[in-house]
Length: 405
Figure (cartoon, rainbow, N blue to C red):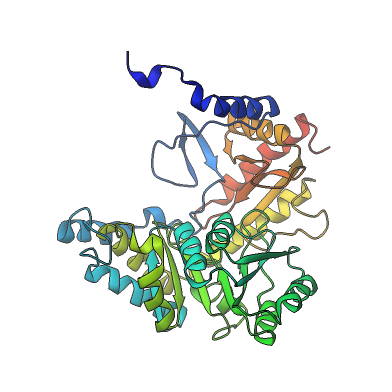
């Protein structure tokens, strides 16, 4: 008998915690996608309309990206074979970083293996013990982990509350050490946009570093998807811009943009960069092609926003709580359907799946207790027929479960 099948007491506490999740009704099993990521596809053997993907522009299957990946695969092989600081920096990696820097209108860029690594690696590299981080309470987990790893003092302000952020900056204004103000550009659970202009003013007033995580804004907001900095015309006022290659770009990875000195420092001190093998060349090539598509095919963003406006309006009209009855909190293609109790959110998701719509339930600790939800996401490649069918199913199942009347 394999030793892996023998029950050992050392990890029994994990079983207890899993049993607790099951009792709460928030335990889940992974849905398995059996074909390409698309607006309608097969999960667990069932064809469903997919409202759960970050593939905002449909680039995961774009022909230009496929062609770029195949060409790089034939030229470079399947992997880079090393970390960037040894022998794993290929010319295609440098080309990608230069491409992103030009796109974002900054001096330089460094690519990380994931958006999570970009945030966590950057915050923990540029700050240390004796420094201060002023962070929105709903910032992404990667920001929170990076802040903890930095050993800086963390001060959390109420969501988008500028007055509270200033109170915290005032508290540490006389203290030695660097100060960092950090916010998501688009908040991933509610779909609202960070108050970047006001935070930039605060950072400048108190001499703080300004950092934005634009993961859900890249390819969605700003000219050709340049993000919240471009959306608000805050060029030159944000010191550290983080983005992702895993959502609208359609591939994998994260990046940080800023001055040449910042990027050079991260080359030397960001631990995920130093200790992770670099991107497969086919992935780098895919990302380069994606930025070309952003520039050349603006109609994709137009369709994304057309679908977003339609679906958000109709979902609200059905009577669902989409973050506010009269004025929805969401300002982006992310539209939450808030149901409150975790068990109910998970059951709602399962019933929708049975009827042909996939959108997962999200409960504590990902969101606060009492704010469990389903998170719907629009893409440019959804058809009006698919959206109409999804809305019919939402309405029918929501009424049956008593979520709407």
